[in-house]
Image 1 (cartoon, rainbow, N blue to C red):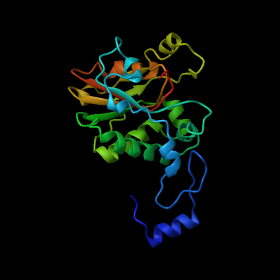
Image 2 (image 1 turned 180 degrees about the vertical axis):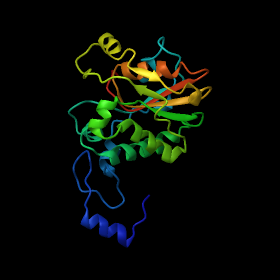
Image 3 (image 1 turned 180 degrees about the horizontal axis):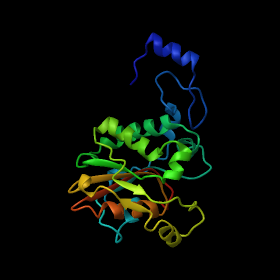
Length: 234
């Protein structure tokens, strides 16, 4: 909980902040999302069953997965989706970091992070990162790290090429589209570690799967997955 000070009150008056979901002016003790919108977020609660839920099931039979969750259900063109749009397209780096902190605080109560050793954000291609100026998954990971103390390792794996949107592709086409787009650069860094792979939105899991396969090339590495949104079937 923020502490109210003369300075914080003055800054809030001079530079008002607005809820990324509903657009309402935020109170001095609110960050990014107002309390009402926060309460109304369509949480999945998958962290209560991290080994068996619709996100984890996407990876069954494809890679050895420890646990996998998404924080909220995601549906495009809804008010809640503005969180993702602001992170990715509107330079709201503060939204990504704050969501990471919020997720880590709430999910952490279940013990989800207790056996994790480090965090690896799904990387962007150099072309897309230069255009956007940042990687929203890396900022999300930094927010999680601030609460959990887990180190973020952003350059263990890299994305070798830029890929077009996968929105209208089938699951099989998505997996083919992102096949071999990632490359493990530092296997020693995650050797024998339990890695939390962080993504923004998971639909079929194709991109996350491709990245995870590279990380699993490291000796005795174990993989868990976390995303803000899940756009697949409940």
